[in-house]
Length: 213
Image (cartoon, rainbow, N blue to C red; front, side, top):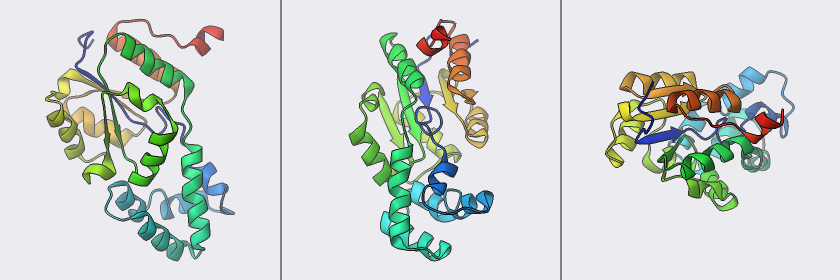
């Protein structure tokens, strides 16, 4: 059991606070016959990783992926627009953030996200204001699971890993954080995340949807 008052609860964003179903995004633009291969060529590609880290521009990404996929720049533009559209807030997780904030817990976001996509989402949604700070991979040229991005947020806020809880849907990211001493929650779905966090904090956090069920 962690100390009931950790100095930080750090949230990943995609598939934790925002819905993220990349296969659906790809299918909205392309006729996909081999989804694993298409994922490797797009969202899991070296080009997208560089985009996440702010190492290439949106223009460069569109040109490089259009060349790789042998598609038009218009198709790539549609893909990026649909990424933003697909990243919808998970109501239960927004409720969780609101409750944690009301209880006085410091909450942070640590996300792998391209700058242009983050800027669009920041302008569209109000929930970002709940975070005490938001660390975005493309802003600092580091991305999870690189230990350096975890060390960055710790140093920035004068925290120790043992004082923090980290939630992420990626096994690699959770493993990296755990190796540094973070208490971690591997997010499978919103209710499991809420339940696991409630147990760690030794408080009751029940979503209204869960109550309704």
